[in-house]
Amino acid sequence: MAEIKLGIVGAGGRMGQMLVAEAHGQPGLRIVAGGEASRSKHIGQDLGALAGVGPLGVKISGDSADVFRASDLVLDFTVAAASVRHAELAAERGRALVLGTTGLDAAQGTSVRRAATRAPILWAANYSLGVNLLLSLVEDAARRLGEEFDIEVLEMHHRQKIDAPSGTALALGEAAARGRGIDLGARSQRVRDGVTGARRAGDIGFATLRGGDVAGEHCVIFAAAGERIELGHRATTRAIFARGALKAARWLAGKPAGLYDMKDVLGLR
Image (tube, rainbow, N blue to C red; front, side):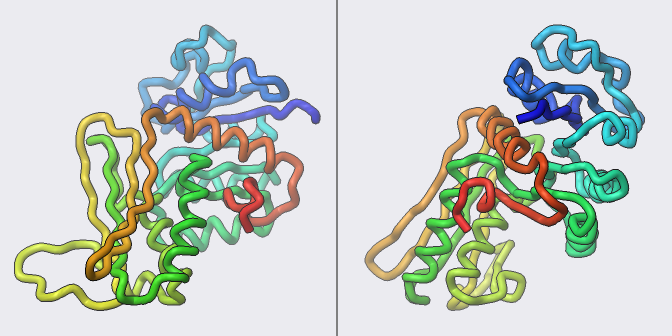
């Protein structure tokens, strides 16, 4: 396979630095560009020095368009508004995009899907291989278990995470909803506070915890009278997300325009 020229937007963030560290030295991958928000303190810094792998001779730019010009494929773990712009840049330049940003609203999601008609975009809420297997298990369990089993999604992340529930928690809720044949938007319960009354049958509930440096913990609970099934995943390092994203990047390189996800990468479709 020809060498893939990688660009990373959000290169100064924790995930961006992890992607640089994991990609550095891998055969067939070469980091050629990095970008950050225009006011970032990291602009002008060397990508490799910042990530702790030694100088790479690649400076962080304050203009994402520079990253797309230089790269074959761009990895994006930033924020929703920026990711919409990055999807548009991918479409304009025909570049592949691995998108890991969560918290996009419906209109922003539509923009990403529109961009995918002109560029190959792989969009996933979580790039852990274990989590993506969990998604399939949750969908299958929800399909096989009747409504006498209530479904609750519990997640915990580090104190710096800005969106809740996590994108992975919502993806797990969507998997359960697909298994049940229901619309998650109409049948989810995100917040409980005060006198809420009895649980509405058939809803999928969410609970969110934040604290410390937790990389990511998710548990889907199927609770019925007299028994409970728990399907979960615990991440102890963010490196697993970077490794999964790079596996996705290798898979996406050379693919035609379209919207893909980790089910495609892992052959779970």
